[in-house]
Length: 188
Image 1 (tube, rainbow, N blue to C red):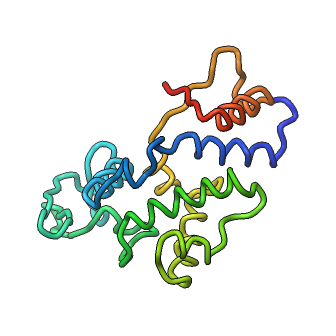
Image 2 (cartoon, rainbow, N blue to C red; image 1 turned 180 degrees about the vertical axis):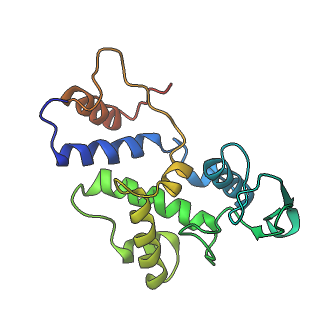
Image 3 (cartoon, helix red, strand yellow; image 1 turned 45 degrees about the vertical axis):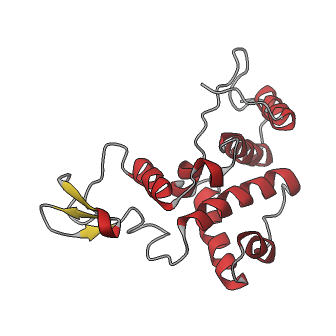
């Protein structure tokens, strides 16, 4: 790593997220709630759901209620149980779009500031108070050192660094910026 400061590392983080978003946008990539729930399950439990109470792996799905039930302890839980999205009343689409919007705003409009709550409220068509809460939760998740639950859910594209470019170098940062400006993406 050659002379890379915190500002550049932050830029790497946000640019990589922006370039990892679906090209067609999260609304088209995840067109409905079942697709979003499926994605959250894949991200949270890559090897299949496990009980959040007893960690058992013998799980049944209750289709009518979008819940899982542990066969061992009979506990019922959802893909969002025990996460920052636990008991949310807003559709997952709002959370996915908020994540995408916050990433785009930070990279395209202001590297210093995050999207204001009123702008997010207008974009999502929700009340300011709800947008402010979503913004706080999403930023805690996607910022460097965050939980990465929502980030992993919406950032579906893997980037492949070209041969000859050292990871986290000035060349790597230049490549990410050029990639973002050109609109092209190199994926693995």
